[in-house]
Image 1 (cartoon, rainbow, N blue to C red):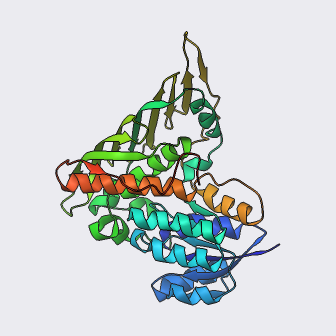
Image 2 (cartoon, one colour; image 1 turned 180 degrees about the vertical axis):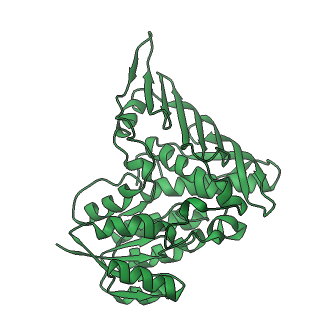
Image 3 (cartoon, rainbow, N blue to C red; image 1 turned 180 degrees about the horizontal axis):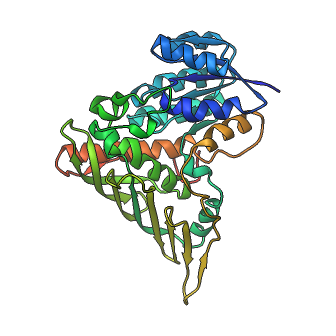
Length: 353
């Protein structure tokens, strides 16, 4: 079986990650590519051998497509992902899945109606060994408290500084995606969304209320985030994010879960995963060195596997939607100087999809 693939929004990251992953798979034919900018579009089409290239993504809907990658700016994800799900494609959408919670949950419902898988591009969810944490979480009873933190070396991306580490890449990052408030620019959507995508895959938690504050750049986008969360099961939580790790260092992602019967600690940077149980019992997972270094081959690889009839979706739409509604509430609270934001609706229940 051969799958025909489309890539919508072929920017820097799609060029550097998603397209090479698809191109390397023997079962995939690169059919269609879309982006703005005729010069860049031609470069990508020629380099990877796409059969069809266009600056208008709707032109691709008329073609025979099996799988689609949506890697356009955040505010365009909803309309594009929905169209390709309704067309009958399995869809991988970049994170954040959308900026609006109602749109995110509508994508989940659209995928269900279409009988197709919706994946969100959370790279850590596909890293070896992290399935073990899901098994650990099952042993700690009801989760009562959460600590979720992410920091990264991204200050320049959000403040107009040098992006010299990408200078050698033919397709450069589009700053408007990361620096424009109206397009979902800022740390929460651009980076903290990674940690939330991992948290909501590891647990069935869903946020109920959020109080937050941010420290912002002169452009108005957030650079640092702090939030207090109450989850629908009654658990409390703290979320934090920062762009201020100095260059030359790796990501920090820490998730700590405290339950009625034990606790679990995940530290991505030090590759530590530990389960603590009563009476001094503990279990530490064995993690090969470098296994959790961030990269994002997993989602596109799994998209192909699912379309071929195998493989589990480690970043399904409901994970992305729970992250979106949390981020939306966080930013709304920060804009109102920390006023509580309630997350309403009953679009998803624990153990649902």
